[in-house]
Figure 1 (tube, rainbow, N blue to C red):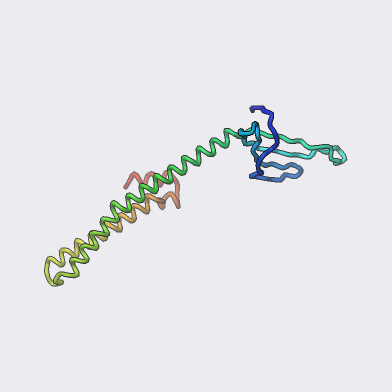
Figure 2 (spheres, one colour; figure 1 turned 180 degrees about the vertical axis):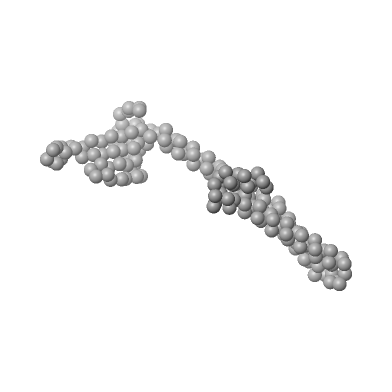
Length: 165
């Protein structure tokens, strides 16, 4: 642990827990006018055997590395979320958007056709097939977001299910 002499504590404690006669909190300790280090603090009452207060014990531990790791972990999580959002947006646009547009075009064409012709029946069947494909796409996108086996089972089951697909 690095030892430094600091000036007065600056900032408000972010976490404060009380354990009997001990108080724990996090704060920023000013080292210079422009430099602060995050610290985890503990403040305890010192009493004699008759429970008469004799003073306080204050301990501050440098938690810079922990805070840097937390910040890095948060950046990684945000980056992964952004990547997943882009993937989902592409899936929605590239597959579902085009399939729904094709359904709309077929429906417009069907509205103008004579229902008794074989061309109408063929176009209607094609439209049904596109609707079925669209439903499959929705199922696949939903599965990619949260596999049921992961929700109700384990990671191993989810990976096995993904491999089978």
